[in-house]
Length: 85
Length: 208
Ligand SMILES: [Zn+2]
Image (tube, rainbow over all chains, first blue to last red; front, side, top):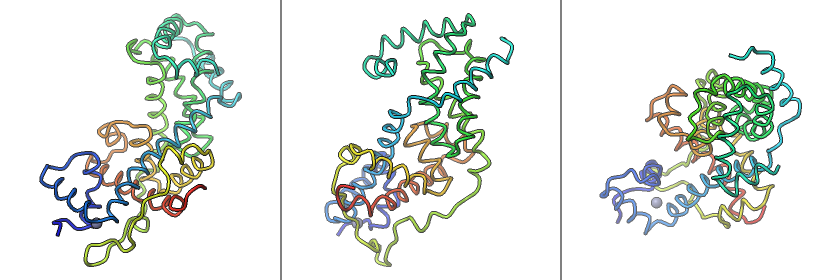
């Protein structure tokens, strides 16, 4: 039997993913993951969530290269209204 | 846009162009400022929209970014990239508008995993049918991910955007949001778990 429960593993999953656990605890987590398919799936989907959030935002930025013309206009106007310092 | 293609393809020519642009900005060259605005306003608007989720405020933040950039051009360190420097200013401008909203705590419990008394999950987790790369190939899936991010309660959404998407360092985010680093860690973990819960029903069964 593994010495950590699913609830503990998931509570400290961020520390596991970010490699912030001491080696003993990390070993306990690894042993739990070996015998628990649900936590393995949770870990995989937790990491995938982070990748999806980042990836979806990057895709959006790739598509968003053109700012609305009225914004460009407003920026240029606001600059010329201010005296150069 | 040609410039952005070059920016992604090769780094060094862009850095050289950056230097030339900054030099012209410092001498008060108006066309240099126009180039700067035309090239960077779009990507910066994507950043401020992501943080603020309010079009008017997002545009105001971009405007303030360029005013601040123009005033602070003498402080620009030539070894850093113009895009990185502008990104940092834009995040600051957006956060100044956000501060009041972040303080309001919101309940995220319903989106966190639930456990039985024996310590097991109430409902077993299952893997998703496709990898992140496969899912991100489809624009409608990317849109769905962004919608799920928008459904997160505000403080959790902001923490996830700043840490996992904009990838700002933990101490910088903690300071900006005026919370402790421990509290930030807890919030980020909860935000990721809540987003995972929102994505789960869509990602279990293949192509959306
Ligand atoms: Zn488990």
